[in-house]
Image (cartoon, rainbow, N blue to C red; front, top):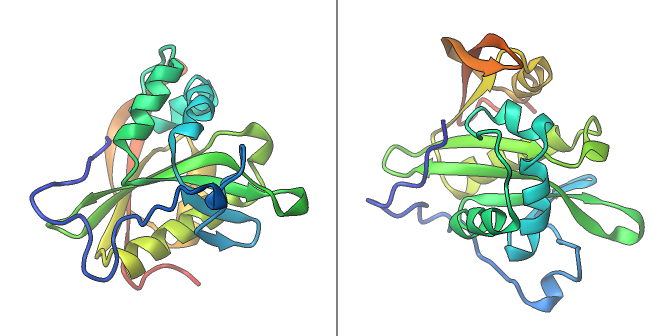
Length: 209
């Protein structure tokens, strides 16, 4: 389930604003998105309207929307992508990968939907570019998102949910430090088969080194 930012309190603590955008030409050129945070060849860069066509193509890919669980399989238009970007500028980053000549290009996206009163984040991530999967971008981007969540947003814990059939994702989250804290039994319908939906959490100070 996707949880949006609460607006009854500031979405971030005094330790850091959710985002401090610099969308000047110096921040990006063409399809490039330079990262604000990076780990080796993976980074997080501000999401902007220029990402909408890529986001649209990813959300039309069954390898992306089936694992998400809350995205219905329907045709997404570029206008849908633009609306998604506009509504998630404050909680979603572009996952970018470093290529030749130090050029960073988007390969996915990651969101942290904050329940500010409780200091809890709901995490999601998708590596949309098939060629970028299996290269560690999901792992490194997840660690960067948790660093941002705990060090900058001053959250106490981060939650996520994932299909039990998505064994690679479950293994990745456990490697980072997430632990299973519950299940919704047979709550995911994927390819004609029902699977459990696993609920996972990681507390401040519990991220594995």
